[in-house]
Length: 102
Image 1 (cartoon, rainbow, N blue to C red):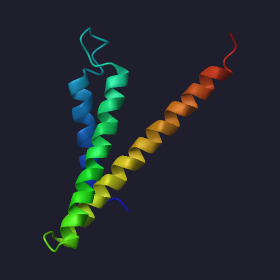
Image 2: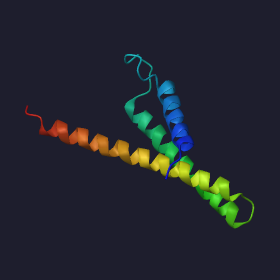
Image 3: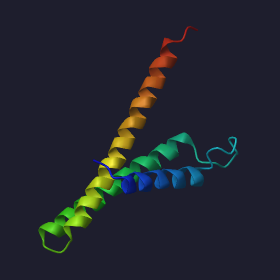
Image 4: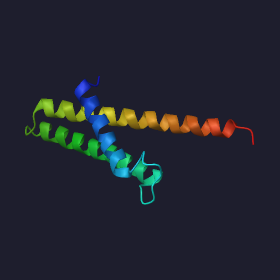
């Protein structure tokens, strides 16, 4: 179960990505494309997974705190859940578009 702190961190990361992408600025030229935004988001999830794996290995070696491992795994869980939710919304939007009459 995600804690409010983990959820707040996930939303802060999303806000930072959107701020860097220029989203919400009326499609200014030079802004990040949707594909690159998606690529950055997936990369962020992968990096979170790598950190979680590194913390788990460090704990198995006796070099990490259990709380750090739990926090890293929870962060990864929130990131993956968010990514799956976005994927589901994109697929739903695509299906809605395909149902539209031409």
